[in-house]
Length: 584
View 1 (cartoon, helix red, strand yellow):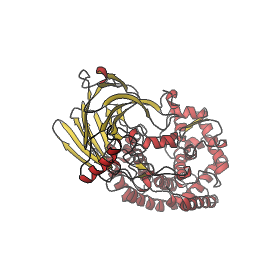
View 2 (cartoon, rainbow, N blue to C red):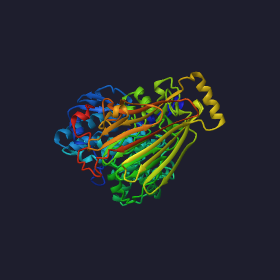
View 3 (cartoon, rainbow, N blue to C red):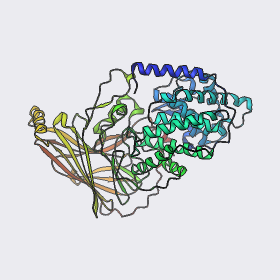
View 4 (cartoon, helix red, strand yellow):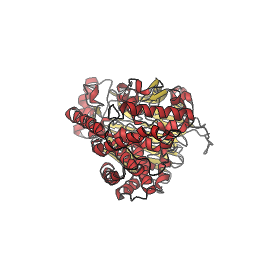
């Protein structure tokens, strides 16, 4: 994230380019009638038409969205990015169309001359893509004179992208800006001269921002999906225009495809790590279909995550150090955390990103205790830098694990993964070692979690910390956060926890070793809601008094749970208006 002089220079550059672009020639129309490639939700479209704008964790009721003061930067970004047009087009009736046309026309009147917060490369690229995707929806029922400002604004924004795409930060922002420029060059009359530059920029971004293994520096699975979606749109647009795609584009798609398949749980949702959510339902399948990529192989390790499969059970583990550099401002202290999904139901999860709920939730969601792993009380496996001013943005991670090891072995009856990280060596002299064993039929996950001081230097550091509170030891906790749809209860006089899933499956958690088992409140953080969802977590609390402490545990289906369960319940959380507003 840019700060200080660099950030000011970028803002000034954007403002100057926006004002210069306002004098650019308008687009002369469309070279062909564009088909929409973005997907929205009908229920969201109906709520927007009614004047309910749920964006960035805030709900604003208005029929004049450009008259309001945005309650947060996230709200403003979503509003000016026009991603909400997907939902309006999904509603598709006359009321939704007239409202959308009016809001677009108002934006052009207020900001079309190069003013306002929406003139940054990524938001402009996102906006251009939506305007082109939904051009028929936005121009229907209007004559040429009424649509003239629309095409003038598209011409101005294309000129802005041509000048400023290089100023977009690497990653999703760069891909949005470049894809928007390519879309405009392919779809708009008079903008064809931008195609070559857009292709070159796209090739450069694919080569620089997507590594040889198909991953991205931030290790955010949902962000990788969004980049992959943009790449698939670009490839499809080039094919339809009978233009040659740069070879780097096809190569990047081929690299990313198996990674995304590896990061997808058995229910089709993505693993929620490092700020990412589960992804829009159907988005990955749709993108794969448009690219024509039929590769099916999954990787045992992809973008730093390890995967275990058994039956219809998937386990995905964070098996690498957290992102560094610029990407660390959104990184989570989640080393060795895992998620488990059975059939179509998520069960063990991480709390997720609290970014849309404000700075306090954002920081809490990044802490180790918000993930399904072991944490030493009062410490995360990676520490956060101090940020003195809110405008400086999120805090980067510091002093995280230097070494994260991962070894996977496949046996006839199970797959085993042995992991470790040294994130607590600098603070306590302790290494966290985790062993996970998933049965071939997916009915049982066996785990061993160990804290150990492994060499003399580590033991010395451990004894220094222990001497402060020798009688009580160093307290730690093993946490298993549960999805809100999972119903958990203590059983066997508090010696076990039963977890019932909506599908009818029953899973039982037991442990062996020093510790105290409890069932405690938790939260499930997801964008698109007004507040975090209430959930539960299984917690085993213990303390390390010697150089080693180990807890063994099992999470297994109850014996009377059938091998196969017909689960036809809907899992579309946006299908019901109550869910839309975060009502449980």
